[in-house]
Image (cartoon, rainbow, N blue to C red):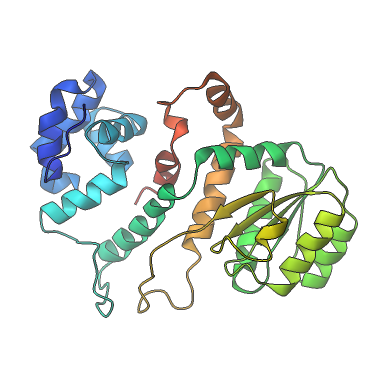
Length: 286
């Protein structure tokens, strides 16, 4: 049974014998170089320890943590460096502190998003005749980027920064299409109009939003909810959409490796590297 101790290094030591040989390489490197390890991203740690990113993630889980970022940040706190528990009025006055804060925000997503939901969404997208990606206001660039990159994977898409355009496009859709509606508040008027129209066309509907119980979510077949703690006001102005970008990247990653994801899901594999949002988010390599 995994033993979680007061500090990360103690947890690794108490569970070391139960680790697999590949995992021990990563664990030994951390134990021998703790000060250096807290400064390494997941790729760097894997390279220096002679293991892989997936092995690092599994090692972290086997010693009692949810993933690499959680363990690294806790170890950073243990060693008294780069604490992520910032005061509301404290400036993040170095690149290291800024990126540590961003990494912590992204890592929190794994607490609220089930990998099976993301796989389901991509399964729907792959079967669609056309995918309409809609958003207004601050989230418009997210929709344009997602639509453009879906097209690069061969998925026919329609997207526009002008509401009149995407509403007209959705009106021409069919039941073989899918709409992805992005709205942090879940109350954007034109986005709501688009998804109402899509529902009348019997399209598949996907919503990416920070709010679950909104009028927009009432029309959703799948809701990907962006959940995070209260953001640091002095850092995030205007509103940051880092988490929406992370979700977009995770969806595209699954699309790229969909056959492997689908196979693992069908076989009921639980300990595969592709079975964990933590590994998807490690693509940020912060």
